[in-house]
Image 1 (tube, helix red, strand yellow):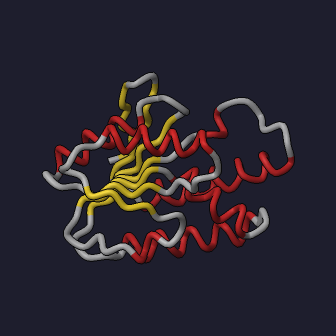
Image 2 (cartoon, helix red, strand yellow; image 1 turned 30 degrees about the vertical axis):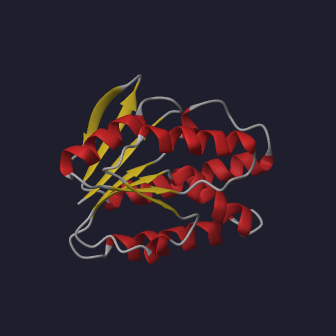
Length: 169
């Protein structure tokens, strides 16, 4: 089963996804995709870790999520935007290669037996138009990956101001 939880920044995606994971499992897995770019990101990582108690297994994985054994588990992957950023930066901002690598990782991860994946992503294209060329390229990458994930998801939920709106499934 694949759940995609999408929405704008601070729309309640992570909280909703965590509650869903705990509803589906007593011992869910949390996969953090953030790269520790600076002190601000480290503080964000620390805050998110403090929000989760001993029921959670925490895994930090920047790119190769298919290396994690999800078989028979409920896993929350937070988030696609930071995960894609890692591909985008490592490919020197190549949208096509980043998209290909991310899709390949997703398909390998999603093919694991009896895995329930709860994937958090951002709708960054709904806001202000990116000011830089690289920002616009990343917005395209994010939009194409979100479409791919949604087409493969069993259920898609759009978070609006903390309210879940089911848009698929």
